[in-house]
Amino acid sequence: MTPDAALIVCRFLFDAAVILIWGSSAYLCALVSPELARIVGVRLRWLSAAAIAVAFASTVAMLPLRTAIIGDGWSDLFAPEMLCAVLTQTDVGTAWMVQAVGAVLLGATVVLPSRYRQMGRAACSALLLLSLTLSGHAAMNSGWLRVLHRINDGVHLLSGGAWLGALVPVLLILPMLGRGALQADARVAVMRFSTAGHVAVALVLLSGAANTLLILAGVPSDWSFSYQRLLSAKIAVVAAMVLIAIVNRYVFVPKFARDHSLLPLKICVITEIVLGLTVVALVAWFGMLQPR
Image 1 (cartoon, rainbow, N blue to C red):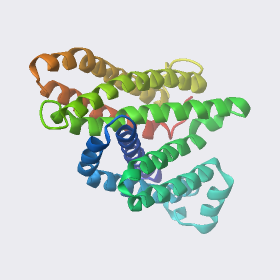
Image 2 (cartoon, rainbow, N blue to C red; image 1 turned 90 degrees about the vertical axis):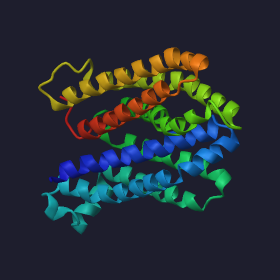
Image 3 (cartoon, rainbow, N blue to C red; image 1 turned 135 degrees about the vertical axis):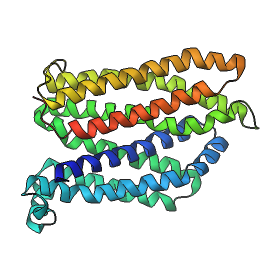
Image 4 (cartoon, rainbow, N blue to C red; image 1 turned 60 degrees about the vertical axis):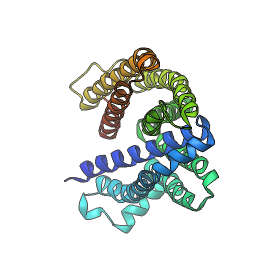
């Protein structure tokens, strides 16, 4: 495996872990009743702990992998002078320092009182997502356009992460819709997710379109570039996710009100999660490439 391939894997693991933490924590904090959030949080505790560990480990690995890519390959993985130069003289190094602080703070949330834990994780994971805007293709711009590009990237990451990451706790809440003492809370939580999802999807689409214009000044039409081929694939997958979300909200949710069938809702949510992870993998890949 080359350092480039290893970094793509590392980026995917980091992005997926942080998106899970951000989306699930923000959803449980803002849109779910305290008692239901507590129950779902307990059920997610091992997955959340694993995601925090993955976010921390992938953060540690990214700096030497970046150094190996900039240098002469694996031989420069831990070269002190190269590591120092990348850390102090590049946008990648600045982004990594912010990312490292965020990862440490995220790990420290395990010692917070339970009533503040989800809020702390939401804040730290948001910082980690925003740290990604400090490097990447926004660096190709200068002045106010660079600032605008980074703000747009931040909106895209936070809205997309909120949508995808919240799907995991939603999947756990769905079985509570038809029974149990928290049935009413579960219904409210799912409807709030649906309402917030409309906003998140709109922001994802608008910021994604703006990002494409900022980078390519048009649509990805030159498929001789791997970046544009992979971006086109991402757009197609996101379109499929949006279509599934619309069918879920306007076909299967009303159908559930009549016959209480959870299976179509669960299938839609699981499919969205799988497609969302596909999007994350594509972004981890084409984020390493030249757009044109």
